Length: 204
Image (tube, rainbow, N blue to C red):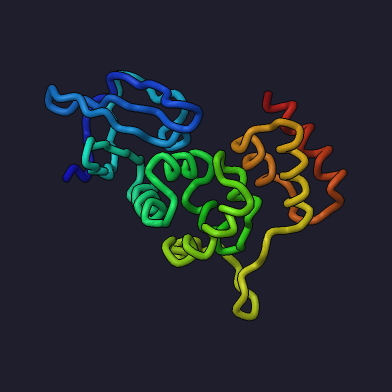
């Protein structure tokens, strides 16, 4: 069982929109490690030293390594693949869209719209996943979650509508996640949309 690798990054290959395959050389042996695109940045430097927390995934027909820059991200990945219907590829995609902290906040707030930003997760599957992820994820690690009268806050309706509008306009999940994080939770959807479109245009 491989738990971590420390070596030199000698190659990287995109595997779809939400995964990178890194080739990490350790003592003359190259290990192929799949990682979410956001974990090490979309373009990690070749030839540099790298340390990777590894989950070794064993199947009947293959052994695959999944790598992460922090133990927290690896732990979150392992909690995700324990959920029914979430395999390694799905967990990698989730962690390409949401950081572990953002994912915990979404689950604790029962924010279906945040989960729907993950490609391949629709409203029905998100609603099914929420209680299972709530039981599996270490929500205590999201210490910034506010709890009032024993209830965790739900997603702001204005932001739900804003996300839906941006999805309809063709913006990607990562763009939407980043711009929504900078906006106030309350306000008219039209005003929030105008602000979001201004920021998205400036980022491009």
